Length: 130
Image (cartoon, rainbow, N blue to C red):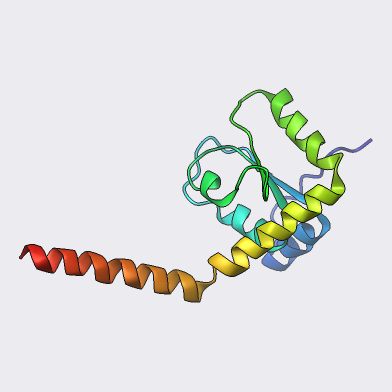
């Protein structure tokens, strides 16, 4: 039985099509700065299984929208995957939480407002030291 497909290079539309066929995304990176591919999968409503690397642990709330696996043991990752695969209802709920987290907190309008506020605050702090 075929367990995995290696897709090769995909266009953006093909990536969205593949994400729409999935219910779980796994990101087992040892190093990750932000996790854009994870964010894209979350926006499509996927539950996540991730390592605690970099920004991944900021995007996934363990038990809420996915699982954080702090191990390099394949069996531990497999157990996490089996846990979600054996409870499709919980996996779908986690996916909906993922989608909500992205739509509520990661919209460009909110990100820009947050960064603008931060820059104003930092500039004000810098001005007061002059």
